[in-house]
Image 1 (spheres, rainbow, N blue to C red):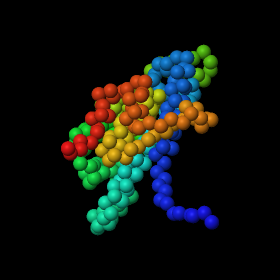
Image 2 (tube, one colour; image 1 turned 90 degrees about the vertical axis):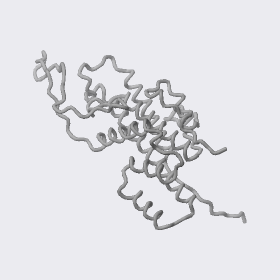
Image 3 (cartoon, rainbow, N blue to C red; image 1 turned 180 degrees about the horizontal axis):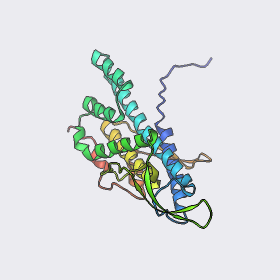
Image 4 (cartoon, rainbow, N blue to C red; image 1 turned 45 degrees about the vertical axis):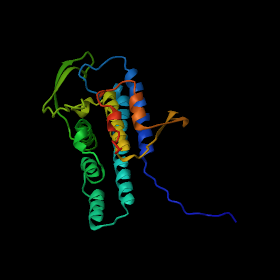
Length: 257
C-alpha cells in the first residue's frame, strides 16, 4: 500500500485575483483602442463605452482583491512564524478579521512585523489610500448629478449632448490621478490601479521576503502560455508607467551585515 501523508495546503487566491485583474485590463485596453472617437463630455456611461467601462471596473476590483488577499496572507504567515499565541496576538487576529479597513491592515502589518518604518514609503501609502477610496466609490456608488448642455436633434425625442458639469465636484485624487467621478471611469484608471497593486505587492514581497510569483496566461480564453514573474518584474515590464519615480529596488530590505 502506498504511503499517505497529511501535508499543509494554503489557499490564498492572490494569483486568481491577479490573473482576473490583468485579463480585464487587457479587455479594457482593447475596447478603448476600438473607439472610433472620443466622447466630448468625457463620460463613459454611454453604450459605445460599455465594454471598456465594464472591463475597467472588473480590473479595478480584482486588483484591490489581490492586494487585500496578499495583506491577509502575509499577516497570518507572520502570526504563524511567531509561534506565540499571546493575548496580544489573539486580539490582533480578532481585530484583523473584524473591523480593520484595508488601509489599517497595511499600517498594522508594518507596525507589528516589519523592520522598516512605513513612513519611509509615504509615496506608496498615498497612492494606496487613494486607490482604496477610488475602489470604495465604485463598490458603494452614490448617484452623481450633472448639469448638461443639450441641443434638440433632428429625430424626435433625441438631443445632442455638448457638455456636462457635475453639480458637486468631488475631491480630486492628487497623487494617483484616478478619476474623480464614477461616470468618467475608463481604461487608464484600471491601468493605474493595476500598477498601484504591483507597487504594493512588490513592497510586501521585499519587506516580508514572501518570494511571491504572480502568474498570467498569454491567451486567457484558452488558458495557454502560462507566465510567472515577481511583482517587481511585472512592474518593470509595463509598457507605460504612471508612477515611474517609484522604484521597486528601493523596497529591498536592508539586512544587517
